[in-house]
Image 1 (cartoon, each protein chain N blue to C red):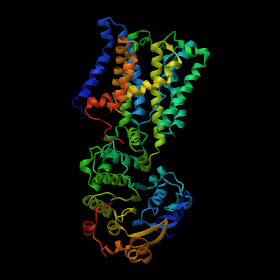
Image 2: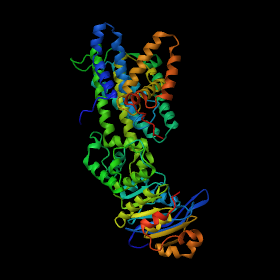
Image 3: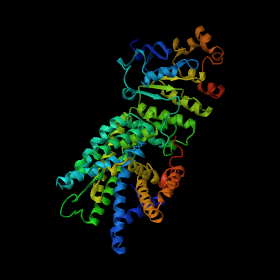
Image 4: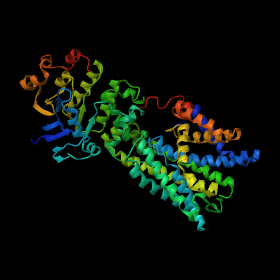
Length: 270
Length: 320
């Protein structure tokens, strides 16, 4: 455990009916980094993130956030510490407008939701930060539209705007570009790049171009176990990683990736 | 807030409210005294339906026991009157307080379930109240009890006068509508509507959705308890039958018919429901058969109820 660690995962273990989905995982997340978690399907990436978010409780082990043990803290309290989560499957409120979705996120951060009288849509202390978040992801022009009929890419951007609106210290991002077309995923990668340094991000992602473009450090998970944690170059040349998982895919990654190049080369996600 | 342009929906709303406001004048003109009875019942049930809509429409908590509050409210008038306590303010206070406590206690249990389980458990609690009153022989058991004297307020509000009673009920409906409008557009209401749309998301944003739902559930029950106190005064009679599960079912139907999750929809739903009931029962002995078919058709085809039809959009077309 380093002193700089924002989040420390210590010997975390979780099994479902005898099958270990998380095996004695220990990991430190440093403040300000984008830390990617990669691994083949079924490696336990989402299970791990769910435990960090508090949706799943681990069987053993500890999770420390800013030095405090949050292992058993209920999911709805973690956002108040500054931990925000975006879902692998888009999770927004379809029968509300784009703006209302983000308003709720701002409201969650602001507290004071036991107000029964004043119209929240007229409340500048909610609307202004909400619009700012929408601008960050480029959805400001769709603010008044219902969220339901928007495109998949716009849903993911809205999701991101909701995450940003809670002004989080740590963002748990589960496949932010999953199912996106070229244009949308390029836009998402740009949005995330703009956050680099100001937020700590744990990124679970299948698309290797996205991972190697964004990540400061990468953890490789195989069958619930950490087989390596290192910077992208070291991961690229790590023989165990190559053997276990990436092999040929890693060869196609340019050694000094640029977002634009890598995005145009990458096959459509999914 | 600027005055919105008058849509068909707005036009019908205004028309309905004006018509309701003028019912006593209409009665005077036509000499049809029955009309004011129908209108009073309509307005009281509309308050109950609007309160149910707060949890059912805005929170998607499908309570199948909402009529229990009508019963509790009515008995909160009937029992004190039985002991010659006629103070109307006290009646209202007791009706709302007991309803709130009942909603809090049962909500703590019911809201831990969802879907069909929630429907069944709310119904079970309402049936418990039903049988409790059935077993209270002192207050007439299942035969019920006549309320000899209506609640007394002041010299100026004499509920024994049918017109005064009607206007008290109508004014109450307006107040309740305004109250619910404020609530659903407030921060609290946003949380409730967000929870309806995606509870998991709301939790991951940091909302303790259970507490918000519980508070909403208590507010709705308290308002309906108030409607119950009016109902007891109106019917001059209380009986467990007022809170039978079929009554709860009718309330749900009225809300769905009018448009769940729209402010004024339940008022339309109640009005259409009562008018059809009157009209059909006068036509044919087996009118309930026709009525039943109508109900099925509405549930199948009128997605979003009368309100969506007026506003020209299927409100739930993109809901999951």
